[in-house]
Amino acid sequence: MSKQNLPQYFVSTDSIGFLGGPEQFVYIWKEYFDDKTLTGVEAIAFKSIKRLGKLISILQKNNIPVVSFHGRTGGENQLDLLGKIVMSLVNLEIVDIENLLKYFPEIEFLSHGPYFEEESKKQIVIKYQPNKIWIENHLSGKRGVEDAIKQINIYRENNINTSGMLDVYHYVANSVTTLETNWPKIVDELKTYILLKDKNGRQLFNGIHFPIGSRLGDSLPVDDMTDQMLKIFAQKIIPNVERVVFENQQTNIGLFFSTNGMLQIQKERNRRIIERLKKTGIIC
Image 1 (cartoon, rainbow, N blue to C red):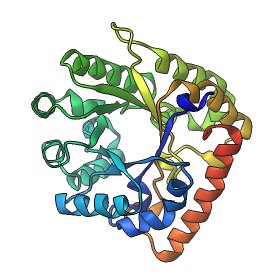
Image 2 (cartoon, rainbow, N blue to C red):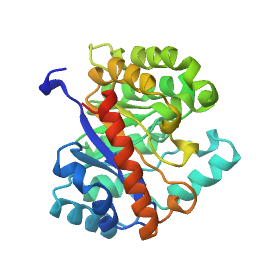
Image 3 (cartoon, one colour):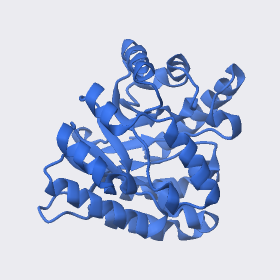
């Protein structure tokens, strides 16, 4: 792959949890921005506007650009009971789309298909004409991807700069136990979706979420995936996307906050995983 065709590599702020501070993010990730492994941040837009402004400012001072916000997901009623409870609580703590687009017009906005399906959200997007929106698959398997495709086409028809973000874990959520056996087939399916084009010949999905967290309820089981599995993904998917976002949710209380000891453990885990992703070609 030529240098100009390399994807951008981003990381999410989910790694520091809901209550984590920007200094914690800097501690965990700055070295990867310094050496250009990572080039941007997808920030979970936790309340408040003032807090988000502080996050952006501190990261900018460390040469870490916040490029995109992950907003509320919507679609809580489409999840099972536990998922509905968790996501309802999380979404309550995220700034609404209108305030994000009003106060941070230069930052891209990402959410899930069901959120963009709501007519009120569509009208807000049309009103503010954001720099760019990303639409992520919400439900597991093909249905989630196809729901996202529908919304991508609708927003493009309304002249909104729109791309799809294909979350790999969401796609495989109901088949994790057979992942190793079915992985080549799954990767081929993902590639087919990524290469799909709209009626104007534009690629529908330009980015992927590759979740590497320790919270396996919303992360790929990276430690159980073989190097060969990662190499297959690198060969078939990475050359065809513009952006790769590493989500990194932490297990148990790490979903909310981390102690200094927990941050050190996460930093060591991240280093091991990042080096493995480089070795297998997912990071190139």
